[in-house]
Image (cartoon, rainbow, N blue to C red):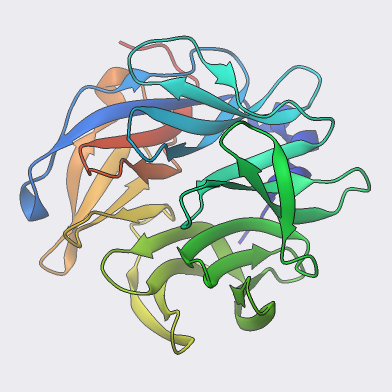
Length: 286
């Protein structure tokens, strides 16, 4: 597999990768009867706009935006068509905004002045408050399970999956050679990640209480990113398509090529489960 580029290491490589856009579409139905509506482009500009995460009320999306100077900040865009606004404006770069389980702020991967990548907490006013797990670095991606438990992607050769307790600062390495995709499993203290092999990507689950890892299923060919719905359905992306796991196989949930979307990667679901955000390469709607 190709080497994974994460968080602060992204900035020098973004121009070569091309631009990305954040889109949102309605999601209706449940279980195996889900339906995806017409996607709407929330960002609409050349450049890197990526890593979406819905706000707690589902009315807006946080995302990472890299501007012409290479600076990465967290931006916020409402679903009502309002213009995007910066959430962080700092000399450092911030990536991967994620709602914290205490309900009082957002965690981000921050590239500090000396290029150290650590997890930081920000208030909802966009100001930094504290570093989370000072000894955990360099962090690329993360997922919260509870106030006392999170999974993190730590850059290295190879990259590592760790299970960390921000309260005790205990950190356990559970796997190596992982991908960039994390997803919280609804209703349980668990999350999923992707183990990368030479010719495949396989979704695994971590029980955050016991640190037990178990293999679940292969990701769709060419895919890695996935999300769980509130009722336990699994959605994944690959190419221009969204896939839904049905009866032990991946069925096409929606092919968004008709709307000009290609190279779909990251996914995010609204808290109510009625909208899905996707990241795709820049393309004009058809």
